Image (tube, rainbow, N blue to C red):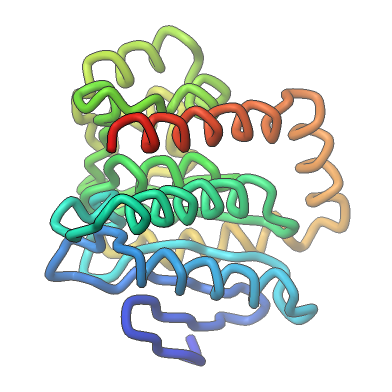
Length: 235
């Protein structure tokens, strides 16, 4: 794998025609602060516009996907609103991405991290994966746009209403993970899966058709508006 770009909080590499984008704040369990959100968006946009790239794998460094939003980041009201706008922009970009997307999940995949993983087309996880949607704990209206499309309404109510953590095996049984692999094999399997899907000339067309028929973008747009309203009202 060729490492092409190293930013402060995001690593970008290429494996064949697959772009690998890694969140890189290991001391913070790859929690997303304002700087990381901006770098992620730039890295995703660059991969989307690169004709040599057929698919994208999103992952995290040091055996952790992402702990979600960085709650330690000190923000005033305008900065908090700006960061929420970045989160909703990231969710929209990932959900509507014009190429095949795979999330490679090891360790914690929480909150905003779980939302980004949900927005990818496919998910590969290891037995170390720990997935949690904590929005209800804080009154944040997030999760309902994507999760029921992946695991059904009943499982979604369980995870979103209780905010409990599920491990990789349970997430696989629910259908959140498409592949369950041993620790250490997650990234290789994700790249292989992205390559396999992207090799089919009709894969992206099918993706767009599924998005249209299941109104995915419409659901995400509605949830993003709710998130921005919640952030405004909470400050």
